[in-house]
Amino acid sequence: MPLGSVLGYTDGMDADRLESLLASVRDGRVGVDEAMVSLRGLPFEDLGYAKVDHHRGIRCGFPEVVYGAGKTVEQLSGIFAKLVDSGANVLATRASVEQFERVQSEHAAAEYHAAARAITLRQKEAKRSSGTIAIVSAGTSDHAVAEEARVTAEIMDQRTVSICDVGVAGIHRLFAHRDTLQTANVCVVVAGMEGALPSVVGGLVTCPVIAVPTSVGYGASFGGLSALLTMLNSCASGVVVVNIDAGFSGGYAAALMNRQAGEERHEGIANWSASCQLGLLTC
Image (tube, rainbow, N blue to C red; front, side):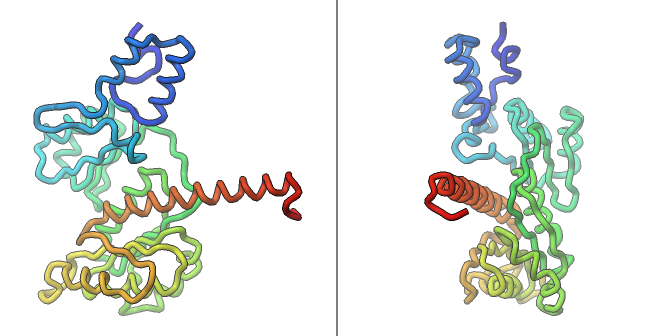
């Protein structure tokens, strides 16, 4: 019987599937030769125009993400299809409507997020994080970059909350969301123009702030360079900066941070509970 029929998947692999495969070999349900067939796509699959990294989900906790800009419709759909075969969630960024239409014709469950210019396909049941990522944008013109961050974090199973149009020209709008900001595990702050908002947020919260400069602004903003330099020179502690318009980078980094925070919190609760049972603490 084909291995895919036994375990319900094809050549792709992620950490959960690898664990299931190894357990099946151990239990005798799958032979070594069959297992080798499944592992042949590791660590990558050569399509000629692309080498699809099937090992990234195991190394990094999330599969390879497809950058759509500069790729033909055929190239993006071909790479996307190979990632779909792994059974994991799939994300393509900076994708056009034309690229999405091809992907959807082959994978009906795929979704297009127009503002973010992103394609997602969820194949795994969502396991939402206990902690929250706040996605904060200075102006409506920054919305597309903020949406790219949100879509990225959510396909990585992170809980998010969006706070829109709270730039420093009307700082009272930001203060109305202070409680939300102070309970977040990570803040992604997206701003163009002079790029001051991340510094303000950084002065209000105890969590990391990921600053995302955008190319929004008039001539002297130099396509986002002004905002980038402002953010890099922030005097607020805990502010880190990604590239101009890189909502994906901000969302991905925030997801990793929030994931780690959740694991540490879970371990802390477990340690506290164990201490109570041992009588080391008065509970």
